[in-house]
Amino acid sequence: MRRGSMYVKICGLRTAETLDAAVGAGADAVGFVFAPGSPRLIDAESARALAERVPAGVETVGVFRRQPVEEVLATAAAVGLTTVQLHGDESDGDFERLRASGFRTIRAMARDTYLARPSTETDPADRLLIDAPLPGGGTRFDTDALRARPPRGFWLLAGGLDPANVAEAVRSAHPHGVDVSSGVESSRGVKSADLIRRFVEAARKA
Image (cartoon, rainbow, N blue to C red; front, side):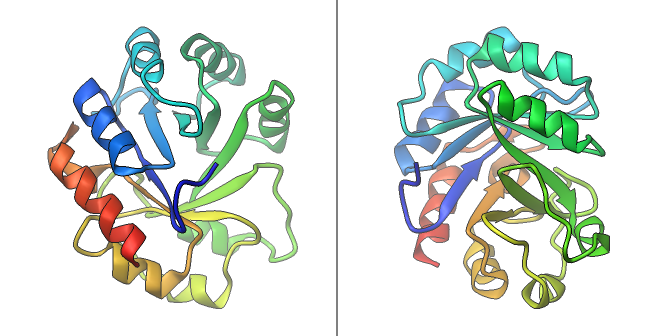
């Protein structure tokens, strides 16, 4: 359920303070990263404790990257997630299996990967997330090509967004939603409650 005109997802949360800030600011979704090697990595037990704080109507999203679908399903169930986001080359069958298990799905891909797909290709994921070449790297990219060929259906823009530039990015690319992680951090992997609140406000004003 969307809580505002622009869908806003705050990803990579690991503390109760920043999760509460995201929910209090009106974020539509909060994300927990389970991809090995990420500076925002969280374990299932800690994520479950945070997910239990999230009110109904706010999505809890698990972010995975090139992990076996059995592992993804087990973690998602253990945490009590509503939504699974996959980064990588996961098959259509993986998304279909996740959806059949009751989870909403997001397929994340780099802009160039998306643009290389046939324009007629359909996707079993509920939503697409168009990201920079290096997810989580805080890098902006040119969205001109996305204006010329926007994704079908509901899609999110990510990659280098922060409170200062999200409004301009929304006006330029016209996504249905935005996703942020490094852009609301005081240092790598450490979220700022103040930056989270400012980001949500700026995205909604756009």
